[in-house]
Image (cartoon, rainbow, N blue to C red):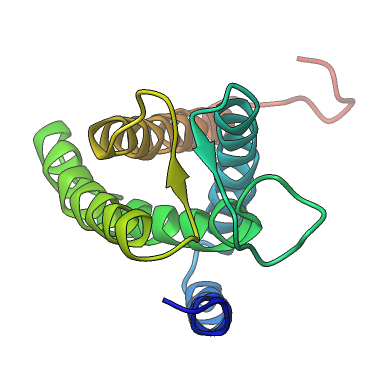
Length: 169
């Protein structure tokens, strides 16, 4: 696949990501979705940077030439998919959360595997495989869902605690 075709794939994914993001922020609670977006971006950046520096992944063709990581994936596509995941699991049981995690992780891993085999957008190095990608993607989905669950519980609890008028409890 030619470099221009790969750049076009990146551009299309970028446009898709922007459209998806604007669709997402129309749904309440906006605060939760933005929190997940930034939390997931931060987590994905840390993991991606670590994996690239350790030599497990490489991004030969990328959106920004100044970055070693996939900016498109870490800062847009992965956080957006995590928001969708959190939206559909907001009221799910633990088994529903795990099942829906698989519904998001498997296609994401399959697409990454295809991109690794057919393009130069991502290359696995050393002993990294699509199984490793699947596990890391799944764990980050579950971690983000766990963290937003804790934040929601704390937020609900803090609304129940009475405060005095002078600011002291």
